[in-house]
Length: 576
View 1 (cartoon, rainbow, N blue to C red):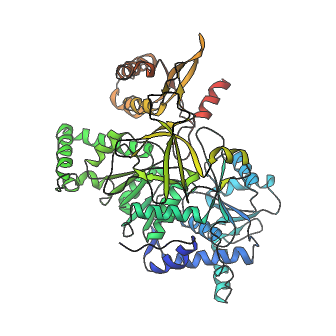
View 2 (view 1 turned 45 degrees about the vertical axis):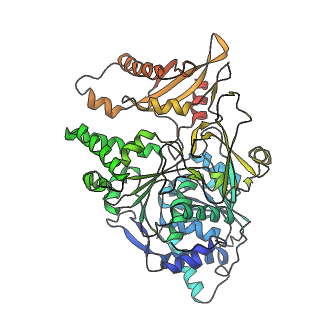
């Protein structure tokens, strides 16, 4: 294993790691209109980053300014982030799925002086120009020539290279203060409005080294980037960590192309969220069911898993046809952002995939805990990563018999604070500890288990805690259900009591396949789901029992990591 030295700043990736891997392919990307993935070497990445940083300083005068970036995943997006943070100003990644008024709001809140946007967002950005400052600088991530309204990313990089060739080294020679505010990330929280998280180089570098200590030997692998880049889970763990270890990052064309791109790129590593893994799992289940040999395959999976525990691992050979659906090389699936059903993990591991789960939040850059390669405890998030301390705060737990409490963490990865919000900062950071708002406990082996969010927990009149996520995992196993959200609705007959309520959306694909000739009526579907919920209730202690079922016609409002925005859903209901 390569000896790891302390990373002083992200500039070390540019000045040391890019040179170390200069002849390797850093990115695989299919641009609009192209049929093949183009290969971008580390040597080109270094040239482009230094050129963009140079032109931003010398021509655009963006020193110490805030620069927003928005668009689909792309190499130019990554290079923009690196150029800005390593010697220009403060990067402000924005969620491309947000509506125009919210983008405008975040640009105003962040006091951005420049916005770098993809060509697909051009019409969107043009639509809000008149509401933005007159001196805002616009850079389109395209090959098009610069015009009066905006600069071309490619043209700026070309100009920057020309400046560097003449000996202009101000950007290249910039010294980085690793404690200085350089990254502003707006959370797309499921329980509250977006908060501005302030990070510095120390935060990101500490998390990168934590990743290396957790899974060091992955530099020879190809990653598939699926999740949005503005999200710190994807950017820190795939793009920053990936380029730090010299991996190749294949950029997916979009969610609907995941299966196709997996066969094109043939990745070894996939970072995903539960919603994506659940869909992949369902497709495998369907393919197995179509063979008519479901029981034989399931039995073979259990036997193969048993043999693997005594050093005879034949799973990738036995289930080669399943592996081919993922390109044939996929070995590791990282899951984060929310808990994943343990049964799905065990099932997919029986086919030869290795699952690594983690727990993190934007405020921690993001990784707090993770499962190592050699000790993967399914259903847990492993232990605190290198450089991080994790504890469970039981002070607010009203149930004396419960070991569940708020997860708190301390370490170099923890944020500087919330942007221009001292009150929320003081609420979240106490004596060096960050209060995550997530609930969990340590199992008998010291592994962290997540149970839910503090703001989601349902507290009964008897002081018992009900964790919606636990019930949602059970409900989501019902074939008729696509997704669910459990919450406490006020009892109209007794204002002091809450009714445990399950709101679900329907699995239309399953309904169409199962009831091809005659679709059941709405009442019949309700009764079928309710019968399954009654079975779930029989397996629960009485105070956790689900008392009410609601079926939604439309999809849940979600974040870009596919988590349900509970506060938005409940707020929408209150307005009806």
